[in-house]
Image (cartoon, rainbow, N blue to C red; front, top):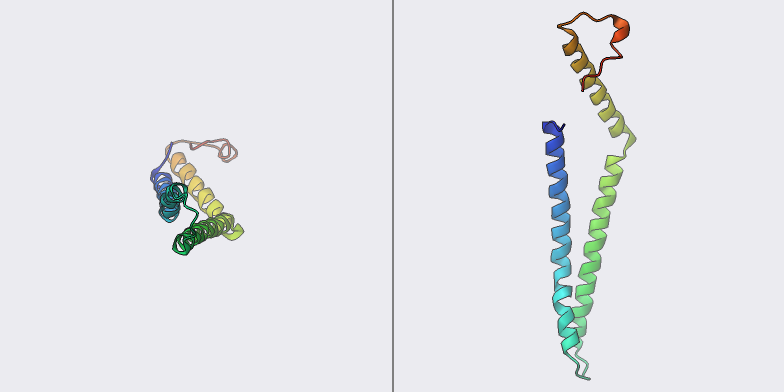
Length: 120
C-alpha cells in the first residue's frame, strides 16, 4: 500500500505537526501555570507585576498562535502551488508509464491494450 516515499512523507508530516503542537504548548504553558495563581489571589490589592506577567503571557500566546497560523499558511500555499502540483502530476505519470513499460517486457500486449493495464 505505502511505498518508501509515502512513508517518509507521512513521517515528516507527523513530525512537523508534533513540532508545531509542541511549540504551541511551550508558549501557552506559562499561561496555564499563571491561571491558578490568579484564582488563588483573591486579595483586593492591585499587583502591577502580576498584571504585567498576565499581559506578557497572553501576548506570547497570541504571538505563538500567529506564528503557527503563518507557518500553516505558507505550507498551504506551497502545497497548492499549481506549478508544483503540475510537476508532481508529471512525475507520477512518468513513474506509472515506467511501471507499465517494465510490466510489458515479459508479455505480449497489443498497443490498444496498454491503457487497460493497471500497474497497481
